[in-house]
Amino acid sequence: MKKLKKGRKFKREKDQRKALLIALASALILSEKIKTTEAKAKELSPFIEKKITRARKGDLLARRLLLKDFSPDIVKKLISDIAPKYKERQGGYTRVVKLGQRKSDGARMAIIELV
Image 1 (tube, rainbow, N blue to C red):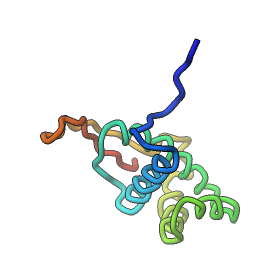
Image 2 (tube, helix red, strand yellow; image 1 turned 30 degrees about the horizontal axis):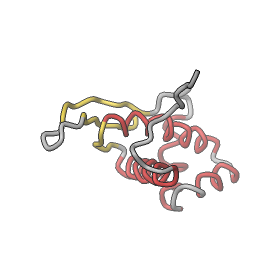
Image 3 (tube, helix red, strand yellow; image 1 turned 90 degrees about the vertical axis):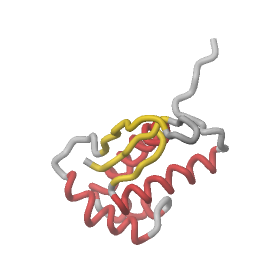
């Protein structure tokens, strides 16, 4: 029996999906709150939470692994500003707030923010 794979495809190839998630995560790190579609927000949430968990360690390996995906200024903000806020928190660093439908195409919108 064929089983579905985890995650959404967004009608994109693998590299395009990864680039989309990295761009959304970068915007979220810089502004700490972004408005996007509900599906993209739900897909972004576990992606960014894994990156924040990695940044909480703050060692050289964590910095190098984060630099594979993000620019140096984003990694610096992630490790120095965002990660210390969540030192005592065990997870759940993001919140997705559903808004409603977009008028132009009816897509369900949401705000994703760092808690």
